[in-house]
Length: 328
Image (cartoon, rainbow, N blue to C red; front, top):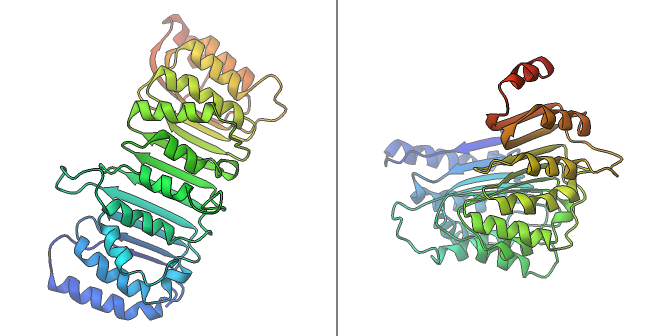
């Protein structure tokens, strides 16, 4: 069979037909020689996860798989590692997306030992990984994972990593920064949302106070919720302005006119000889004609502009805005 993509999302209710379907699927695995993308949703039926993974590990799929998408609880990875016969099982994996959810028992400690199973899972990945996406809505602190990965032998645990997307409740800023430090230089796409404002600001400060080189970044999407975070973000923008094609700043913080102006100057410094920015999204406290004039003058190549606005300065300026700019 020439099937390249396989999506598995078992129902939450025990069903004899589900067992029959799994038996057929497992028996068909030797035929899936062209499979490159596997997605398993184990949120509603974690009990079959181990069975599935044992079958996949015993086939050649894990050695040829290029994209893997796993959705489940952190404890699910204990079953995954129990069925892993090799230290490095994903020899060709290029893209990994993890969606970590909470247990129904929300009183579990963030120090649950299952986090070590998740770490072991990451240690089983090969150096081929180019994209890593983690969407963590659980109460687990991912800091032990990043600490372990940054303590391995080579400076960059994933030397080919060019895309990193992380959304999490909390993480120790230094642990995240230490993991990313050797990867910054190759990153082309970067998204970061930490729901703890203090942790988010602390990571931005770690970056601002370091000599991190970010030479290839093309797209940046980042969550800002405080004035301190907005100030620290400018250091990241200054170091990436020559390569950025898309900047998305989301969050609950509305930039003042002065702050937004300084951000535009960081994006388009006077000494800049080349700018690739085509798309910009930002939340501003006040929209005014002078701000849009500044955008048009400093970033004339801009093709997409998304503004979240608290208020428009001067009702008489609304007509001017509509006559000079088209908002779609």
